[in-house]
Length: 476
Image (cartoon, one colour):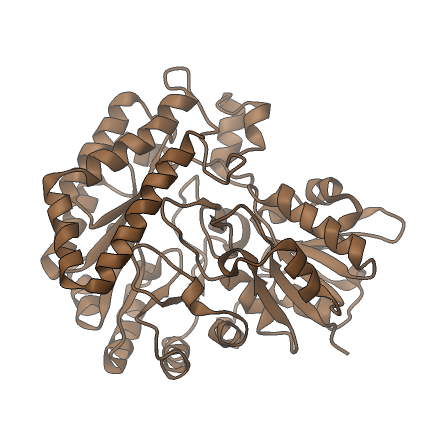
């Protein structure tokens, strides 16, 4: 008999996007939440399960305890920033329900399984490594922990045991639709992303990323560097399901690390979406040729989320981005020409950063002029090349190592260099935002967008208030 299973993204800092779909677990400039796709996938495979995503739904610890009553198995998604509070949630659950089997998933426990179990003491029974979908299904079906690949667990005598690794999933079409779990368990209006239409839905059409970026968490910990994909037919079928079951959805976002990596497949999916009349967006590397961009745009592509990271070529080389600044410049011009909107993401404080390269990145962002930007601080997550490099080079002190966010969930700068300290890197984020947005042309662009739509007017005004509040909170 299948164990009654609760999948949980635990309550955390107010407005903290630590979800099982978030790439940077932190409080955003504006209230933002990604769909908990990594929890929804195994939840779709276990009959009678429930997914509780507490932060977007504003569910408290007390309410979470009430929901957990009657469950046999609880799977908590965790991350490096949220791990201490997630352990506290596990402790409270164990205290109230001693027989509840508790497991943790996420990149944090995948790369530090033994340390995580030791830090969690008796509150957590096992952690799942690698891709954990089938791992959790086997546990829910009652297979003894000693026989489940891909977990590290605490035996009855307290010993920590490391089982063999789990093989990567090859047949991606065998996985059920996550949108069915969204329909069953989530209120999709709770999920906001500043640059996507609201309400939106996001899901993966494949896992893994061919790029070798040294800072990127998922390919180095859970997803791998091989892009394993669902068939175009399977993706189109899920979009049809969404159209039928969520008529209010205004945009679909494909959350693959780099959806445009397999261009023929991207074009095939786009043509299918074009026939359905869907508005959609995806992640892309800034190297997609004009002809592919044209096919995607003609078939409903509205926006690309593009990781530019830096405007300095040496920094891009240092992080193994595999991208030339000139190629990014041409790609962006092609998108502007076609009318594809760009949300550009940048990272300050990467290896090689100086005051001069920060200025170069700010100037580059203003020159290529994506519609909106996100500026993050270099975050050395355990399990990444960047983390090991930072430790080796002395850019990360023991005190910094455990912290990627402050006590309010706002991202901090854990790395510093002899020529550029924490504070200078931290302050540069605010400088970049102000210099990018507080320009006459950009203000006119956003004002024009607001004047065309009352809904957009309300939304941008709300986001403006949240943005100012966020900048204030950064300095406590």
